[in-house]
Amino acid sequence: MLKSVGHGRHSLSKWTQAIAFLTCTGVICWYSYHLRLSEWMFGLYFGVAVGANVLNKKIAMDKALEDKRVDVASVVADACQPAGENQ
Image (cartoon, rainbow, N blue to C red; front, top):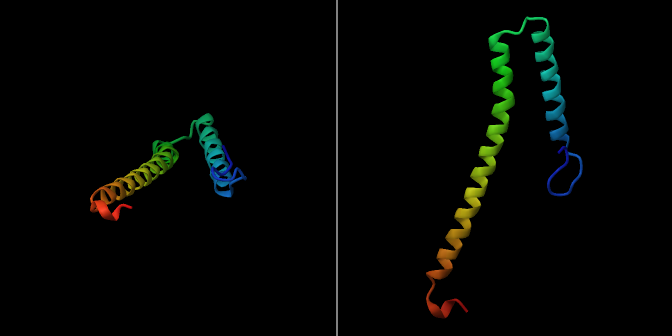
């Protein structure tokens, strides 16, 4: 989970995100345990925790769609060439 997808080594950015998430979760738990958790604090925590995940998924989806468009465009370009030029 904390390793890079391509080569399997530990990812510094993933470790940093995990440590920041756990630290923020600890602060939220501490404030809620002492009944001092405000709505804006929880809303900010929830927005950052969920928002980062949603944003990462959107970026991945946009990249996948762009790759698919490039593949379709190359197939169409190849199919539109005159018969003698395909060889």
